[in-house]
Image 1 (spheres, helix red, strand yellow):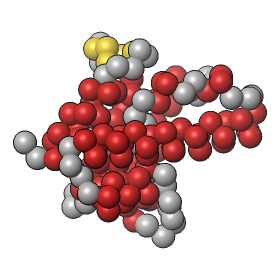
Image 2: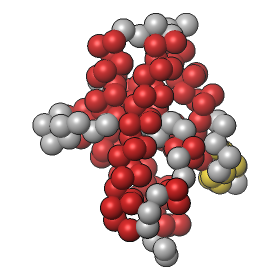
Image 3: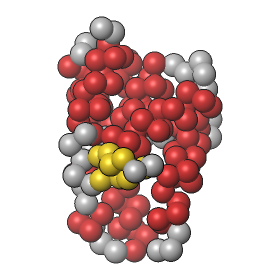
Amino acid sequence: MTKLTQAFELFDTYNQQDPTSFIWEGTSYPQEYFMALKLHEWVEKLMPEASEPLLLASRSQHIGRWTVARNSYPEGKVGYLTWRKDLGKFHAKTAGELMAQVGYDAETIERTQQIILKQRIKQDAEVQTIENALCLVFLEYQYEAFHPK
């Protein structure tokens, strides 16, 4: 089994613990597990020659998102942006720890974390690709429920 496959298994196992369910076409999934699979699919569509760090980032972009509740931060824009920034750090740290467990080197972990944290988004094609894929996943699977809010 490759390190990539092992990392995907660790990410998926982690995200399958999400207590929030997402129903798609009559089937219930742990929400972040489902979204990670769909993000990964979109990244592969948008960049068929995606690097290993981009693939790793796509599968762990929102790993464990449910563990940091939005309502644990103040209401309003500042609270929301602080929550998102802290979540990004949490996702990058968690992904890096799981990647280290399967033997990834520091350089690959750091690059994956850069993508997760969306560093240099306008200058880095891989970071922009994951952002585009995130937008497409939102529009395809989450917009209808979000729109009335």
